[in-house]
Length: 78
Image 1: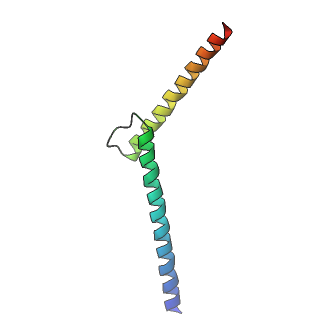
Image 2: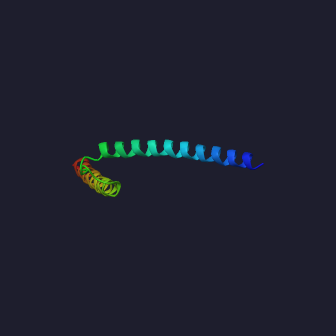
Image 3: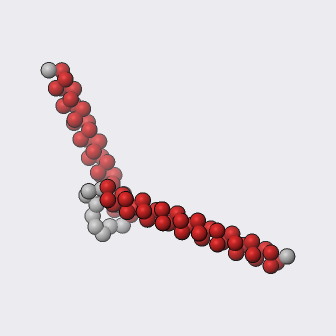
C-alpha cells in the first residue's frame, strides 16, 4: 500500500513539475514578447523594470490617442 502511495505522489510531483515547466516556458515567451513590444525597455532589465516601462509606454499611448481625438474633433468642426 505504501508503494502505491509513493508512486502516486511521485507521479503527481512529476505532473506538477511538467506543468510548471510548461508554464515557465510560456511565461518566458510572454516576457520576451513584452520586451519586444515596449520600445523604451531598458536592456537588460528585470521583470519589475519591464512592467514599469510597459506601464509608462501604455500611459504615453493613451495620451497620444487623447491628443489625436482632440485634433480630430477640432478638425471635423471646421
